[in-house]
Length: 61
Image (cartoon, rainbow, N blue to C red; front, side, top):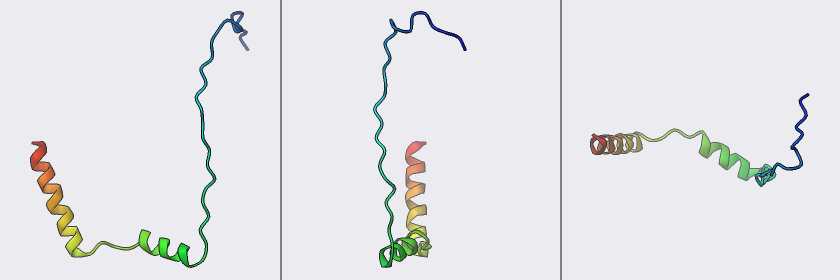
C-alpha cells in the first residue's frame, strides 16, 4: 500500500447519502400493484402511443 505523506493536508469532500428502507406491501394492495404492473395496454392506447410517437418524430426532423 502506498502511503501519502500529505494526507493530513488534503481536503476530503464527502458526498451525503440517503438510504431509505425498501417498502414492503402485503395483502390486497400487493395484488393490485402486481396486476397493474403486468397489465397489457389496449389496442386503442397502443394506437394513441404510436400516433404520439409519429408526431414527436416529425417534430425532431
